[in-house]
Length: 247
Image 1 (spheres, rainbow, N blue to C red):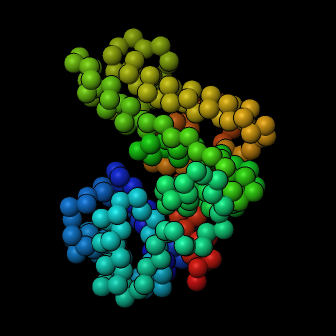
Image 2: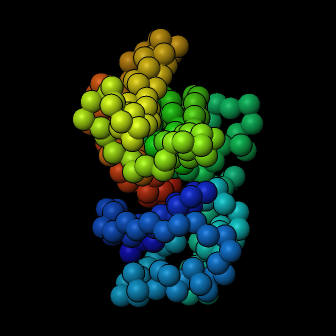
Image 3: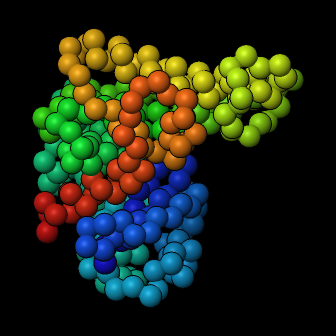
């Protein structure tokens, strides 16, 4: 069994894999204030019945990375594979400073290898990331505010707009405050995605597959106009590929 972690600023995601297939996936809130033992206690009931051979981490939160390293050694008796500079990935990175590219971006990019030679990965997480990968090269990235960030900004900066649930409204033009806000956030995000895909196609002068992933992908998928491939485990599929290159 393989245990993998994708640590973001909002969520810590854990996946368990067997025979190169994801069999379980879990989500937790990212809390840098927890000790390594407290984090392990949160995981214990989910992992106690398995024997693990590999422990893999992709993280953009250094404090959590350090604690997961300690957990791997103390509780799993494993040397963890941390996705960092020097890790074999098979991915070339076209960036002014490759050290700025987050581990999650690298893992998702590698995960796209199995889908198409040319792909645009749209990762709907805390931020919305667009990763253009062609011939095993991360060619360029677009980062925009995520859905929840946009909604928080809207409600915190306007006195009369309420907190709302994220849902797809029945129509674009709303007739009450909640529906109007839901429409702006959901359909606005979908329009941004469709529009950026077309602009990126013009810039790279090529067609490509579009892969959708991330925690809020299922909310947006039904209202997108662009044909897409939904890969909810893309970051972990990428980590499995990277692990295979480093064993």
